[in-house]
Image 1: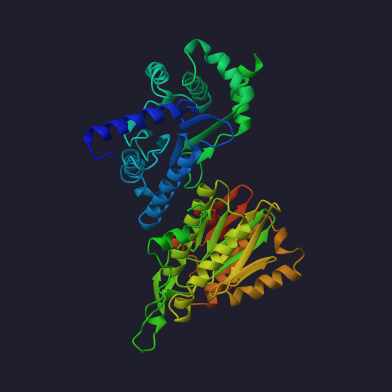
Image 2: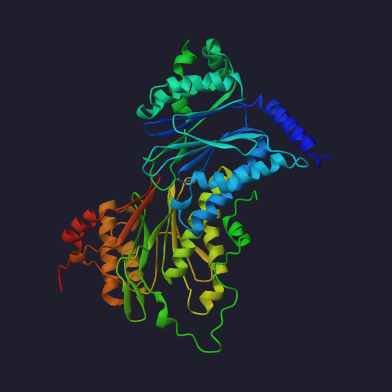
Length: 244
Length: 263
């Protein structure tokens, strides 16, 4: 059925439409550098969206929970076997993406007989010396690097709106986590609604859904540099929306 | 996939902690000739948690191989393993254990229970039985950790076959341990208060004196060498996690309360 090139291209194009449609209702995920390291933020309705992957690497995911889980296991296995056989210093986000995740995702996307992964992923890595690094991975296996910040959101207007805001942000890496948290929450909302509705959307969200945030920070003791942001911290930082 | 067992994952990639068969072509294996081993490690409860300490010497037969070995290894933020026995195997077990706990926490999205951690070490020692029985891979570690369920530190010691025992107050292991086990028992039973009531400063003094005593009677245990800045590794564990006592503090304590008073 797909042995003729134009049919295969059609089928891939149909998959893209299908995946975009599936991802439309997914909750966005934000990652921004901050003075302490990298702050990740999302809003969930029961399924975790932010994960610790290795000592200095975290994952943010939007999409189908079962697909996220499968890919999370792929990258966890690869990272830990590599860290054990060689050294934790040899486990890098770029290698995990380029040699682990991206080929698996691309293969599933292009093999028309198989179900593709309904995902969009974000990988954050705290560098040993240089600036934090952020990567995004799309359902077709394409990955990109970013430094200023990342918003995972449905393609189209939401992404464009967020990218424009990201460009205007003063360097978040210079500001403390609690200040960057504010920007991250607004960016997240921008992934779901237009700019003028951001404040009211955040207020509604805080009442109806659960905030989730994590921090990669070099100042944490021990080899593991990821910790979830506590609900006490988040309550404190979201008071301006809750009080009004 | 999905069970969070790192050792199973490693085995699926062809890893083996110990080879199932070891051949010496019918000749007797002289372990002492090439195996680096012997040591003194100890752990006891004190007022602020659990203290774990170990000397720094690694020997092979009568040869001192190394005098700066770290035998008290952080396994996670609230657990350490002190190693006695063959370093190659012991360090490997510690590495597997450290990765196992991290892998479990990250894949299962919850910490492994203390019981699970204690059993994990036991399983590794059982996997190592072929090497232990041939005299070139025996390890008899002490595992100490903070247990949030009872808000207290706990100490476990193992034999080389993997049997695990929880100690009430203290544990010792290694070639120098017989010389200090009795001292700890004596201290704990007949001094005014049990060892578990010692404040941290006195606990560190006791640990350093015990290791110096072991070094006096066991050639395979290394004592303090101030000139070379070699001190034992001393770590404490409580609800705040594992903390190493810095060398500067050990140096001060050694000068004031451990250095020779009487010949």
